[in-house]
Length: 114
Length: 108
Image (spheres, rainbow over the protein chains, first blue to last red):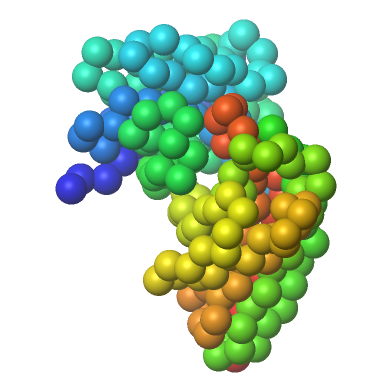
């Protein structure tokens, strides 16, 4: 079966711009979680979506937002980019919420803000 | 969710067993313990999970103490490809939240 697809793989943006990242989960998986990974802070939870609804949100400012479509694909958006937003953004595909053994991660989008 | 504590780093000789400890003293009776690992520049990968019985799969074994306050992940014959950061999690009903984990270095 196809894995988790994240696009784009790499992205360079300038401060103040906005960016949209995409995640296509494994077919049949209905939940998607997003994570930000930086060398200093490690892997931090951003948000979780199920059935087009945000179920949980991490401790990030409102500049970070996301959504999920009816086909379970998800996008996350970061507005007014800051240098500190440079990170690897990972998407996890989950069969259903609460199936904590079932996380399959994509390869991530590496965002560089200059 | 239970707070977990892991040593920041460990070394293991190639071919030997790697034993990675995790403390989860605040775990409640129905919370599972999950282990994931992250190889450099890749997303985390599920390894194994358990509630109170010891578990084994093709990747590893999980030993949970009787009081459930700690557990040990065992890689029976570590290889260089097992070099990674290993995360022990007990999220309860919340999404997975990763701590710092243990950086395991397998040495030839």
